[in-house]
Length: 264
Image: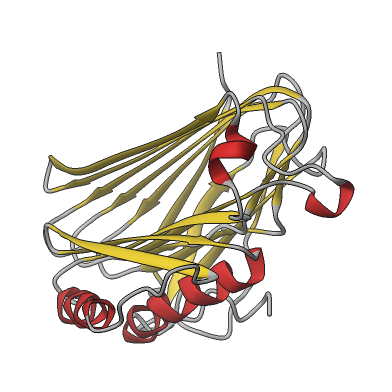
């Protein structure tokens, strides 16, 4: 049975407009750090005792964001996935007009790694979400380029109890040949009535920028209920992260938080 780490974020009664981690419980090997942020959002930062996911690790995190609160869920560093079988599950429940910014660092699978990852987001009709997920080819500098045995990631988003998005990526077999020149993949999501105009504007901007043949980075977008989904593929991880950050910059500003402020 998997031991689940949990956290609850609520509006800070002593500081109007700010949010606070009301309760947090870690579950090994997952650790939870709750640094005091300069902005109004509460931060939940995950790290691992093993420096990543090692063979046999099954980690799970459940975060609840109350109405009126804003929470950043991120990682202390990139998630290294070592050789062997491991899994991680993240569940975020946002109530009322609460907001969640789920922006972990890139996942770096090592040679022969087998990773199963599930991210489940549940929003109320008035909630807001900014999310990104970046998957890299691995330790490219060590000659490991798409050398993982298998990567299986699932992203599920429900709004007001109805599933609006279920996105699954499975990479196995001769991935290196099929991925060719690309070093990183990313998914970005913007959802919520407070962010709908920004999502539409980003889609319109993308439609006006046709992708040139052989471009070092490719971005595609599509509308989903209350927002937009973006997919990115690029020849360099840094460029993919930068492009993802550019897409999500405006909605993050709208929510009053920069989830990359402690990283770059």
